[in-house]
Length: 93
Image (cartoon, rainbow, N blue to C red; front, top):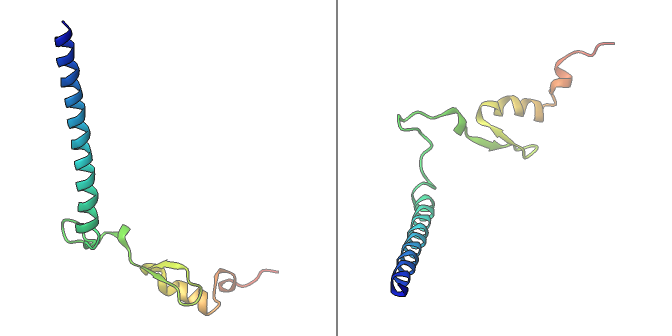
């Protein structure tokens, strides 16, 4: 009876040890793979299209804020030329 319990405990311990080792291997492989292969990967989707959520961003030369490429020209006009929302509309008195 005592030998049977020992066998069960050893089998359980071996299964848990295998599970922990396998989990560690998967986590290590995944982190290494993403750091090596996907870091410099192109931002295109599987069809070769450039998705909108991966818009290029630029630093403004005047105020150093981060601006998306689609808003860069309007931002520069407002930021450098002083034509913001306040100056675009005439004052009401």
